[in-house]
Length: 127
Image (cartoon, rainbow, N blue to C red; front, side):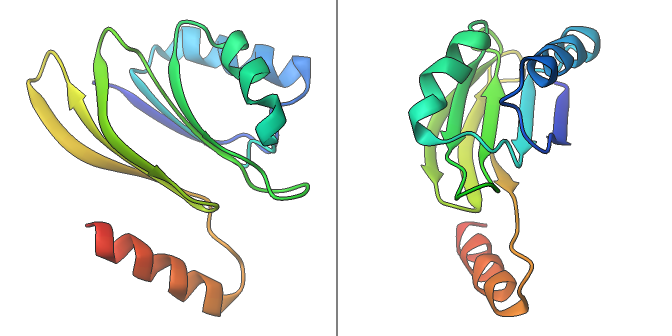
């Protein structure tokens, strides 16, 4: 199983979408974590349409920053459960060819120390 994690710094522009698709076509990951997508909730369906071969979990941006996405190939991976928060996504996944399930976490952390501590506390409760 191959994974990719990328702080895309926004994926609303057509050029950025083409770049992401090209990278996915070349690297052929099964599971992808995107941070700082800057996608608002009202644009989720448009994003999903651009990545039709992928299943995805999306967390909306807050203002002009943030936003997370986990994408996976449905022929390889099944998501058994998930939870989406502003700076955190977690999913329990099952990898079909390995017959193995485990938890994955996608994080786009805040800059302020108090907020970081709170976020890591939430992550520690899931692990």
